[in-house]
Length: 352
Image (cartoon, rainbow, N blue to C red; front, side, top):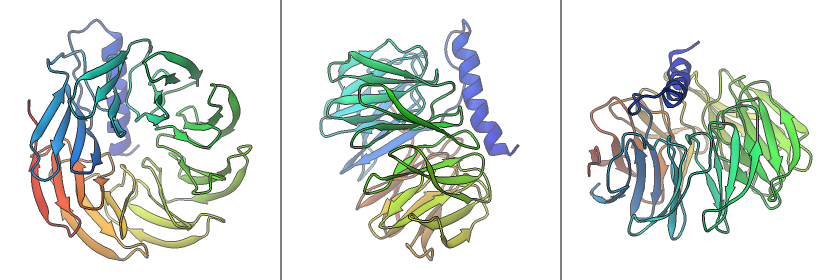
């Protein structure tokens, strides 16, 4: 098994062992979850969630006000117009006021901790937990329902018009009604670590797994439309632009496929593993390799620019129409910000 796989699984195994034991605090290094929103971005890492100014990296607020070694954040937040939703590894899910950083509510009924990113629609948040449960929590912080799977949920659920789609490390993809009932399930060849991706018309679902496959499913019944064999395991989320699906694998290859039939349009090979997945720029695709190389490419696969940061990266970069922000561990800084021309603006580790 590759070093990357050992490290990621080790992080989870370490958390499981530590949180199940009677120990004073958590002794494990996780990865920062970063979301960019207009002129501010939000970093969930360690004891706090930070709101940082995208222009200069200054911390505008942090949550919670007091540190608690039992409360650690590694899940990327979900950012809406007014609130932030994020889970921690103390089995608690938080709704935070976006402007002030004050707690709106905390949900404490989960039986497992949160590593995967949640999703939200109409005030209802869908939070995947490490105990294999997907929790639906209403706008007031009350539990609506629980959907149970048989293994860890690291993947963000995707919300369609009539269903929620959840990938699980039990090798299944589930379609769940918005009342919490199973509509269908489809078994993949391997564990689904990353988020599934919906087509623009909602008719197809694209699923990467660590079994080295990208699979297109029919959202109406879960039937397989096509399967594409990658070079290695797929840990990061894919991206769709027009009728093209872009994704990377742990060998360092990037693929562009026709979404309708799975035909390979092009493939580019890079030297380092791509674990974090793809982010869409206004005029291309961005990703960061495990060893800290930021790469931006045009939609035809040709290079735009690249830059190197210190540390290891297991999350996709956060991007908007002005900035690209990447987070790393075991490097000089935690967060690195660039403009879309590839010029570094600043780098820093947020502090209280």
